[in-house]
Length: 181
Image (cartoon, rainbow, N blue to C red; front, top):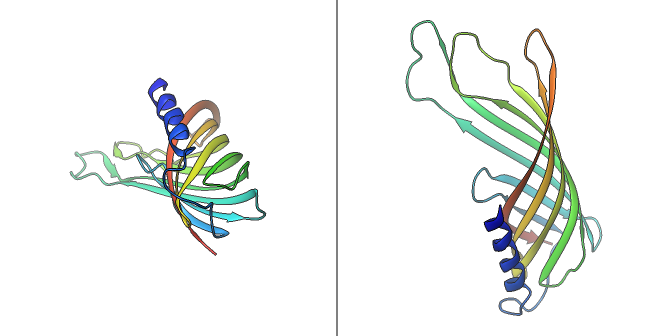
């Protein structure tokens, strides 16, 4: 966590200089990838006004087991599907665009494995507070970093008991986006 914070601070200092681009963003619609270092989400960003953007978030992870299931058990392939919405307030529309926002993501996850009794998929709702910054390397391309404080509500469908667990976590995500008019 300390290393990620140092990287975040260094990137903000680096990107606040006039090293690369000469203008801010051009384009109201952006397509990109969040969390390019691990489990990426596709993010579609639309600027409703000069300082407010709405985000549509979608992502998928698939896990396929290679071996057949042992006798008496069932092989399940795994998946993790994510769909969400977000809203971001951008403080500056220059080369460096810091922002603050909220995200809500619904997820469905099935763990891969060999089971004697097949488990139900796990559903979750993640509500997150987002702090980040985009740096425009070129007029229509940005790289960024964002820090999320997430409240992850696990909605279990275990039989016979319905359970809801809340997890609080933080994530640091690197982003890349291309903008259209």
